[in-house]
Image 1: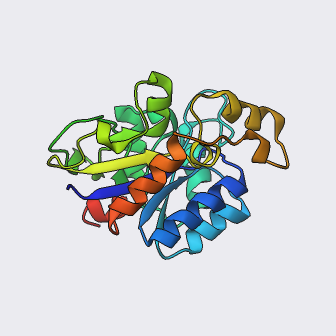
Image 2 (image 1 turned 45 degrees about the horizontal axis):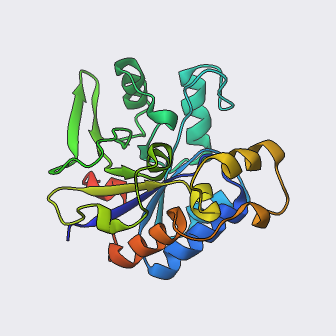
Length: 230
């Protein structure tokens, strides 16, 4: 079986969801890279956990709460996670100019924004520009894409986990915590800001048992920065 590596996009998830997922990962003894969107007690706990690498998850889309322009947004996110050397952009937004700005920070050295679902022989590669380099680490599977497409049975038997190349998975803690099979409860949580998330959770097949099953197979894993050789 190929090595399995775990990433998570925090995406402004409530603290109970972050803490629940972090506890499950820690109990399994698996390394994980978390791409952080905001400050909270739970995200501070992620930063303090030696099993976790924390990178940044900047939102460069219009209306971003992280700043008014790309430079402000990068400054904001790097202030949230000063130790970060890795990033994945929200909604996988990217451009040559943006990557140049990231290189110019002198701090972010690894980008994990490139999504190549189901592709074999994936590996980290150097992205060189006149003033510097990023190492780009592509990822292979993402929970919310499978929710959108509605084609996955939420069993790893549907996927070839034994093929060659990197198997980098991406989950969203709120989808895992709620066990989302669609976006209904997920969107209601953000709209309603409930104090109690329990009524929004579901049982049965979905991202949560799928995630826990993957943890059982991960056998330690590596951080994104390690996959980049940093």
